Length: 242
Image 1 (cartoon, one colour):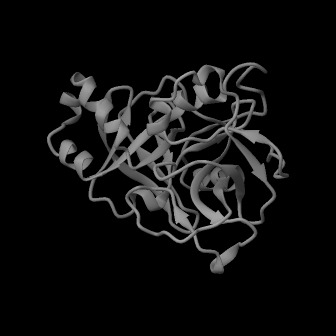
Image 2: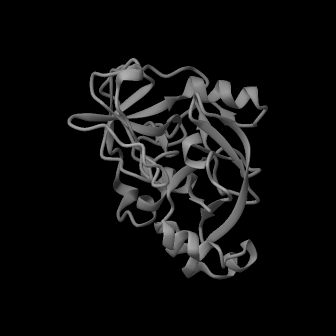
Image 3: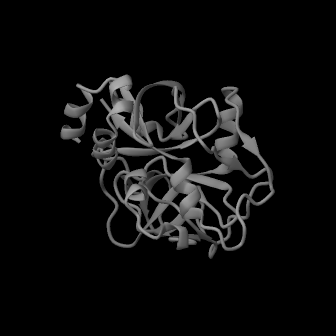
């Protein structure tokens, strides 16, 4: 993280666009992740990943741009960053609240991992939903840097956003957690754990409250044999705290 911040101090948005190799190096050190919400370049991420940053940068496809916090809600652990990036693709949220029962295969991964994930076009899922009372919970190998990652269902719709790791079976204030951003040090979950994500209903309410545009549809965004991993890589952005 220190190396990333030192590099960022010498990289302006203009020079970063011209220096793809430097941007790729920074992408590996991104401390959190985000999801593009619209063609204007707004990025959804975790509030804990950006709330203490002096400056926030967003990384995508060899570009590094400075971002501003457009909306934030620490109680939901949600934030939206405004950027000058113009994404090729932005997320689609389901119009109807998805079922929260366990056993649904999904995909969720950190931006930095996605950049070096080989054969992602053949990867249909890497996590499974489990029954939980505290948001959307996943059996997932997601690690530090995954905060702000989108949870995509098999149809390619955004079902939630990763924020932390919690012990299986414990909820509420007594449950120790591990936030999944490299910039934070709030560690505590041990033993059998699950990844918790903010569900899509809360995300929609948050975005509506701040008048942030986003797409909603119940129509599948992927065919039955298309990869959510590839779509996640296109939607994903890296977050660096300066």
